[in-house]
Length: 88
Image (cartoon, rainbow, N blue to C red; front, side, top):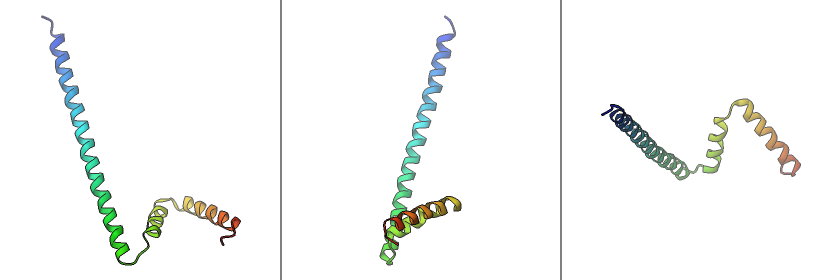
């Protein structure tokens, strides 16, 4: 018999093991993501319990992620729109 079938079986086994490993890693990361999401929700609930406005906190967190130049541009556009609508 040829060694090719044995090599294919070995390659198949390696591929299956790699696939299983990848799937398990993704599943672990999804679980960690859920745990972190729950923790973030708990922090916002705590903030709300202490009298802070959660919507404002979420907006601040979003703005802090932006590059300062991007943030200034976004704020300028928002201000322009608000002025155009007579909100300022």
